[in-house]
Length: 126
Image (cartoon, rainbow, N blue to C red; front, side, top):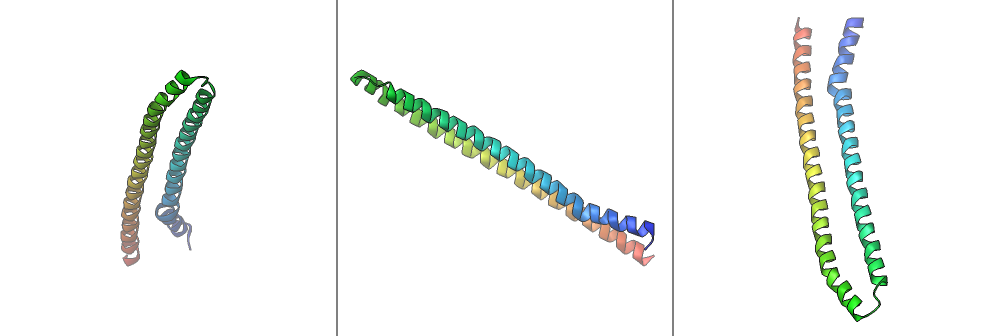
């Protein structure tokens, strides 16, 4: 096999296999990083909320304090519900973005493979 043929085969493997595999791995790594950051952010927020609520409960010393604490729980429940909804929407948006990127990558890979196959067919018929 001559150097030219070897270079051509190497280029075809790069464009059809290795390049797309690296692009997909990079996309997956970016997604994992974003997902972990979102999870850490949510865990921190929920932990902070739990600690603040425990401190508020410890500060209850009389009936008025208990009434204020219980009334505050309604707001806390509403805030937690909104936070959970926002966190879920964020993850759904990230998943949709990754799906679109994967589809685009697949389409590009198919185009490249088709082009390479056409080129290879033309060069072998010459």
